[in-house]
Image 1 (cartoon, rainbow, N blue to C red):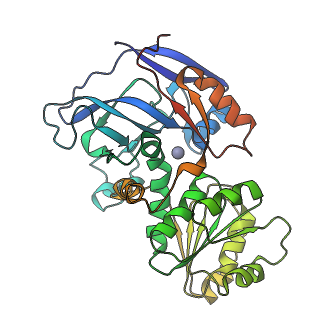
Image 2 (cartoon, rainbow, N blue to C red):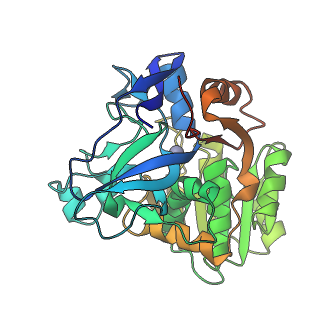
Image 3 (cartoon, protein in one colour):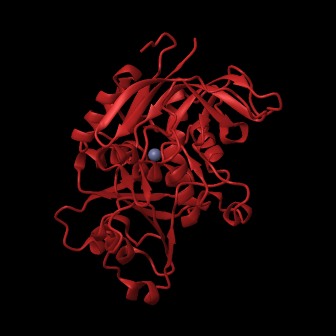
Length: 354
Ligand SMILES: [Zn+2]
């Protein structure tokens, strides 16, 4: 099988299937992966509709997708970490080893990061994708290719729980029940939190949260005093808040409900400028942290959490499309935002021809 059918964002509003040349291994530590599952991310949709996210602008056609798993089909001559036939999750961002951020142990902040489907770098939604061997995680037998694809958003959740210092018997509140919020709740629970409250404005999403390990849910739609309501539900205030919605009101409520000495982790991206209850940060000696993607060990931990059986990601997969219908998948996501949690694109099939 030659050629590399790829799902390409040509320009704002235009997704096409395009035949590209099959990538060849030139680096002896690289592996070639046949892509099998790819999750659609909010960022893909944003590039599709707006052509940019912050300072990242789509200036030339770009292959979409960065939440992928697949099967290794070829390895460079010096590869030792995986072999042909292994099923793998692909960590989609590769930093520059020359940056201070990389050297100081924060490679997720490397300004020269080559991240799949973030301009100008092509994404993973194609037949064959190349990755350095140390940016793939081999999936144990009991972890599916679906789970392998979900290792990407789950790694964000793992990073957030680590930043928040979640540990056994923690009390955690998560704002926003999109994929990352739901996975953050599941992850906090798997990491030992005994109370995990999820807040959102859609009951359908809160139902999924309950299926994923949340111990409490709160629809904040018509709640005047979220702090009092949280105290009623939990009997105390949370030690950790993971804010995964980006909504100003959720940020404000997150700070308000935290226990004194607690930690606030901002994961969601919304408006750049918001009103912020800074007085409470001082008064309660809160720690406020930002979360950007994931860093060393998070991908491995995400896969290990799924392998442990302590965490079930299945409820977030709400829709599926075949690779040949990828454009429909993006359009469906675009127009059904409230019903979709995560859409998985399956394939491409071995026989797929353009
Ligand atoms: Zn993503």
